[in-house]
Length: 208
Ligand code: PRP
Image 1 (cartoon, rainbow, N blue to C red):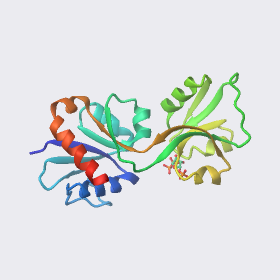
Image 2: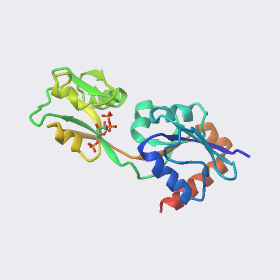
Image 3: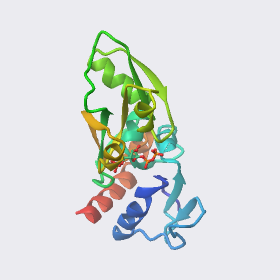
Image 4: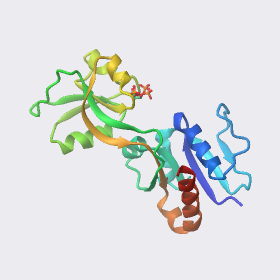
C-alpha cells in the first residue's frame, strides 16, 4: 500500500538523489534518467515518486500533494513555503551571491537595480542591509544583465564561479549556503510521523 509521496526536483540533482534512494534500499525499477515518465513506484509500491520542476517542489509539499520534497535550498528560500526542512543531503552545493563588476562600489543613497531569478531572496537580503532596490526579474542568463546595462548587480547562484569569471564579473557579497534539502509537509509530519522518520533515517544511513 502507498504510504509516502515524494516530490523530486527534475534536473541535475535528480539522478544523484535516485542513486542515494537506491543505496537506501528503495528500488525504482522502471526509472531511467532519460525517461519522460513523471511517476515511479518502488518495488513494494509503498513510495510514489513524482518528478516536478524544482521551483514547484515547495508548493507540492506545502499543499500536501507530496508528503516529502527533495529540492535545492534556493527554491525553498524563494518560495517561502511553510514546510519543515529536516535534512541537508549535502549534494548540489553552491551559494547565493551578489555579483557585479570588480570596480562596483555600493551607494546606499541610490536605488540599486538588481537582476535575478530570485526576487524574494534579493528583496530580503537588500532590505536587511538597508539598501533600496529595483528588481529586474529574469529567467536565466542573469550574468548578462550588468554587461548590457540592464542592472547594476545580480543576485544568483554561484557554483564553480566560471560563469561570473567568463563574463568579467566577481562576487561582491555572499548571501547564503545552498544545497539539496529534504522538506516535509507539516500535516504529514504529524499524521505519518513513523513513515516520514523511517524514510529520513534510511536516507541518512545511505548518505553516511
Ligand atoms: C546557474 C546560475 C549561474 C550558473 C552558476 O545557471 O544561475 O548562471 O549556473 O554556475 P557556475 O558558478 O558553476 O558557473 P544555469 O546553468 O542553471 O543556467 P541559467 O543561466 O539559464 O539559469
